[in-house]
Length: 510
Image 1 (tube, one colour):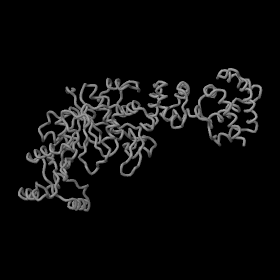
Image 2: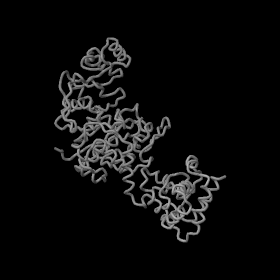
Image 3: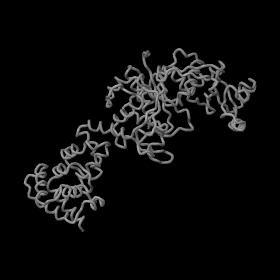
Image 4: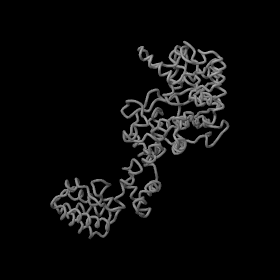
């Protein structure tokens, strides 16, 4: 049953650029909220000041806006539960951590990092598993459970560094009701006493997200699978605060996997594997390193949305291309799978190709315009649109518009040496010059008359079609690429066609 009103949140940390897995999480929250007439909140979880990256928050906001995801409440828009940056809510968390301490569900831990390192080494030397601060080990460590109240008060008064940990109960079963995975049951014997409040006076994610979700009246927590191991801890916090009856419903989304299915697609995989993993370009403020983005690589935002929505969700039909309105109508968590989805870079390009084909010639012209301006050419709009109609079927990314069409606007300056060596025969120069002379006599120069001339010429010359057409293509575009030769010739016109033959033959026969 869907609560009314629905309130969901996307809560990224500004520790770097937003990975496409994060965009997908935001997208699923957006679609769920819009389908149920609910509210979507953007909350910035910036309590980890050690990992804070300048510019990351603005990058996240701009990237999500490019994808068409609009928030109802956010740091920029405000809202009834402001502030929406956790670093600005520290006084709120202090109140709630004290509640846990007073009720015996949390405790002060004064252990230094050096003391904990000794404990880790001791565990390792004894052949035990990795040390964790839990129900067993806390009894032999320096915390408010093992030292007297007077000592605790003295250390607090003296400003002794501490953290506050949750006191996990012994041998209890915690059930996480997950809308995608069903019930997930964990014994508390397998949980450690996680830090809820750090020595810098800020909460960890575990405390802050539970308190904020409660105060912001979140009804559904839709987040990545990597948070599933933390969910039992969060359920316990709801129980300790007495909020279990109004706890949000959980939905943990499956991982996005590398193309070979071998592990999670990470932030470091993108440029290494030859495709972006960030929505927009990111420049690391520390190293200056530049990471490619889908926008700058030539993807359309609605194509990226369709790429991502299918990585985990199945519409149950053969339909693959959706408008945002159609996605809102059809999206449901019931059709989100449990298993990871492999990212397919070629399928991603296919999606973009489909959406580019849906654009009008005028829209594609506007996309091509920056390339024309950069190259210093300004052909008439009608000419450009004529070119676009010839090449658009070959276009998968926006830069392909230029790569597939530049020779309509600029004569080739170089000629592919390998193609030349393969196709240029001793008789080619004479053959091409003879064809040019006959072409010059054409009164009506179009693809139909040119085609007739080609057929007539090869019949009289006794050569094969390729012996004429392949050299002509090399002279027109500098390689063996491009659309149909007759279409190309008709667009550039008789004068340019003959000029390219003249210039090309001169360069190639020097």
